[in-house]
Length: 172
View 1 (cartoon, rainbow, N blue to C red):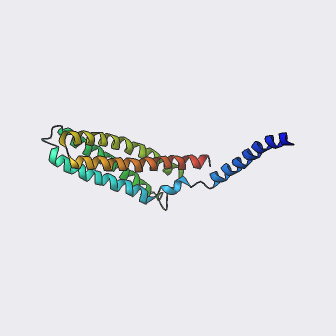
View 2: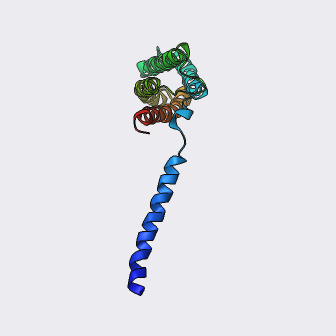
View 3: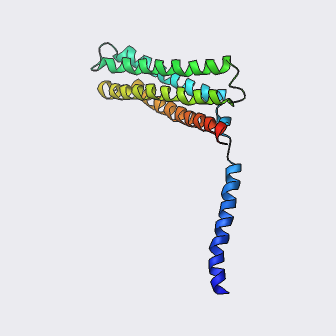
């Protein structure tokens, strides 16, 4: 009887863990629920804050700075990221795809795609902010660097959830 118990316990344990795993999947949060207008607006607001700091850096260092173009490129890439994020926001809103959150598979994929494009611009902006901080000892460039890093964290998470929402539409 001891032999049967030793073999049965791992089997029962596997069955129990499998049941818990299925239950956990059923209780998993809906990835689409995080694709809210407020979440996208938060990204846009942080990019705008970074852009304001970059504008101050350009005013101080964009002409006569030791590496003047770094300040300008930071601002240019932030403006590009801002334009892409607001274009997504406008498209979602105009087409009624954003409230209370994105549920349409195509819209979720658009969030995923636009997020990728915003991320690229933010990475370049952060690179140039880094150069401006070092060459100009610019507090504004450093603040822009930090806000850009924050925006990257936010948009990366939003893009990942957009991908998950899209996938869920086809593989629930």
